[in-house]
Amino acid sequence: MPSENLKRLYVDELKDLFSAENQLLKALPKMAKAASSDELSSGFEAHLEQTKGHVQRLEQIFESLDASPKGKKCVGMEGLVKEGSEVMEEGFADAVLDAGLIGAARRVEHYEMAAYAAVCEFAKVLGQTKHASLLEETLAEEKQTDEKLAALAKDINTQANEEGSEEQQDLSKPRPTTPKRVA
Image (cartoon, rainbow, N blue to C red; front, top):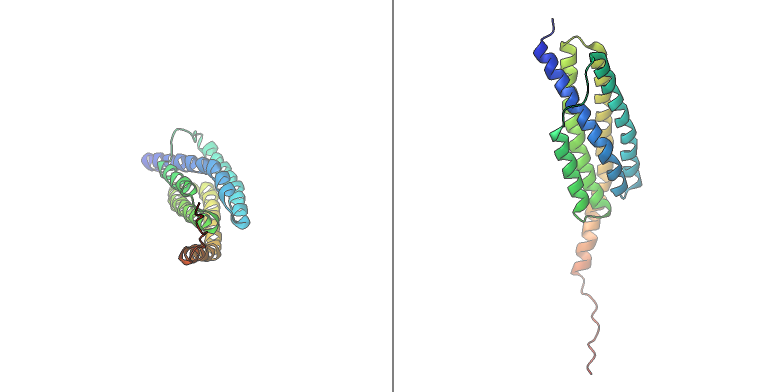
């Protein structure tokens, strides 16, 4: 017989994830718009569509539990989204901004992977095999997204480093001066 306390924790954690995913639904379009790389922007847009599916899976689980997904705010995701927003406000441009966006997005993915892995284990212990299957599907997608971000980061981080080198070279070159006019 499943523990009522574990079931309560399970539902609470699912509510946290529901809140997290809904916060991402608002953040991902902003990240896609801020990205200078078309590939990164497209990746954020694709993950937005995937996130809508994550929300639907969670709604399906809540429906089968006869519980409401509302009533909890995921403060962890709130902080991660805020950090991502700060990257966009720092005044970085081009590949450097993209590198920052990837870093922020990867932190989000790792947070989600940890959360989905935990609730998936709860579902298994509670005998919720259908839930576990849905949660594992989302976990696999989160892992794929992280892998795609990691692959993108290789090129973008190199570009960001080169952009920084170009700026430093520009600063080290003597600037042409215009002669002062003497009246």
